Length: 446
Ligand SMILES: C[S@@+](CC[C@H](N)C(=O)[O-])C[C@H]1O[C@@H](n2cnc3c(N)ncnc32)[C@H](O)[C@@H]1O
Image (cartoon, protein in one colour):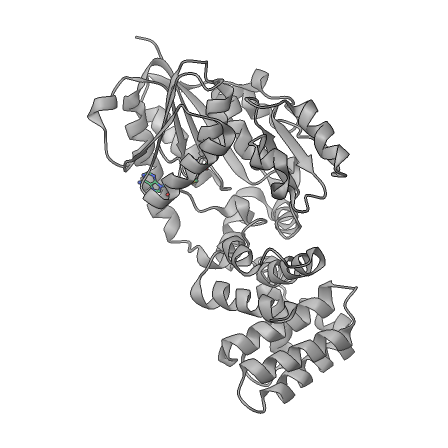
């Protein structure tokens, strides 16, 4: 398979079978692939998924067949062709058209290649005009221009306003930088940064997280011996803040109720100097196995994994935990820049059910912490309903709990002043992180 055909197969899996973009790309990228080809695949696949609605809008102006009626593989071929001509300057239009026509001969019925050729050549001739979004309504405009389902845009404009929403959407459609977390059990940030620089990586420290390094050019970084030896983990800065804000002492008992694949649990174990106990729970056995694999690589042996549904109460653990982490199942609207398929797979009606689960899990967690114990509630989503509203409802009903400020635990308070009140909502266009929410709650003594 050549590069374009690999892209097409990934897109078919994502669009027609609901597969996750990141896993599917990794599945199709074989070890011996050239870096140049891997980068091209990522750019085309992510670009098409991110801009799907906008590309369909352009195709609808050019096609005699309604977009919904075009066979799925042919539609993905057209999207790829238009994407390359609209967004990728280094690819000549002629090459984009020819590659698409060849693919359509293999993936479509006889005669469809003429249609593909016509649509794409027409686009190439009138690109500038065809790329203008001509709608008057502001929700429709952002929805088409940045390719979002209208329900997400409506919610964000209501909560944050038009300009904020547009900036957020632009940021979500840009390529995120790779962040890695230093494993303090094996090395420190300075030592690892020096080592990575010596390999030619461009690295600098994260703004808020103490253990984070941003890598500008992370090509094949997980193939380095430092990764195999457990000196670092790939993790967004926002996620690193959960462990940092929990700030567990050595020897503590920590319960992580929604733990797999263990990004936060392993960080917490590292912060505790691998002393004490972390009980990592999840409902999926195969995901819990990933925690064990990660712990082995990182040199951690204080994590115990258990299958346990956080919606149920474990009476054997009541009043025992020093810290309880709830990295709750959520709508994931904060990680669209890494997983653009979320835009298309998430439904508005999911949110009510997620909020019900989040509240129930928080309500169980309260039973596990000792007086003076800490709950950290986090999600990788944007929007009050799954975040601050869940926490405030909980505090209203549970007067023996309150928010506990954590400003002093962050390396900077720039744009996150609410940290001093005990919660923070991060945004890609403001903080350069995933969209993420964290609250720290303390159970009062007595
Ligand atoms: C946001 S992810 C957790 C990520 C993890 N904390 C990390 O840092 O790697 C949410 C997790 O909750 C799990 N989950 C969903 N429903 C659950 C339930 N009722 N009880 C326990 N875990 C659940 C999912 O399987 C998923 O692994």
